[in-house]
Amino acid sequence: MIEFLRNDELTLLNPGLIHLELRRIAQVAKRLGLSYAPCLLGFEGHGGNRTPTIRGIIVYKHTVDLLEEAHLEFESQAVENEYKEKQRAIYGRWKRLIVGTMTKKRLEREYAND
Image 1 (cartoon, rainbow, N blue to C red):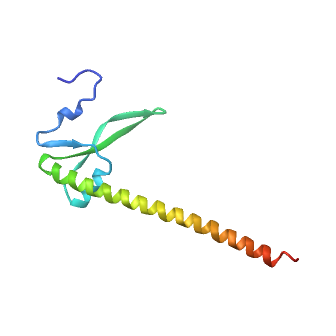
Image 2 (cartoon, one colour):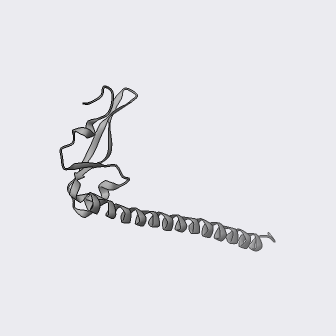
Image 3 (cartoon, rainbow, N blue to C red):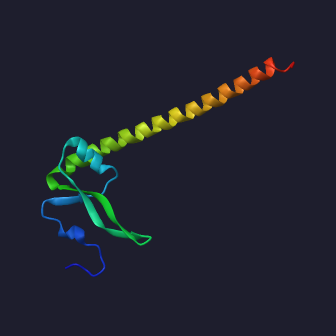
């Protein structure tokens, strides 16, 4: 029985389907070529507008293990790529600072007598 004012749409899923609410899970399912559907959980009101709340995806139960393993691998790669990107940005900023300082000192040396 569905309780009043409680979001129990997930209990209305067809047998054999399961809701997965993991970060970037739809990208993983798409890469694997698995059939999935975005999960609409309700609507939120923002300034008089009603916008849909979509969280996670709906997949078949027999694909859950494969999808979770692939998601774990995908997330570890994503974290590693984010770390590399941050390191590249940090080194770029340091390089810009050092080159700017060296340019400033060179210009001060060249035009100090003028």
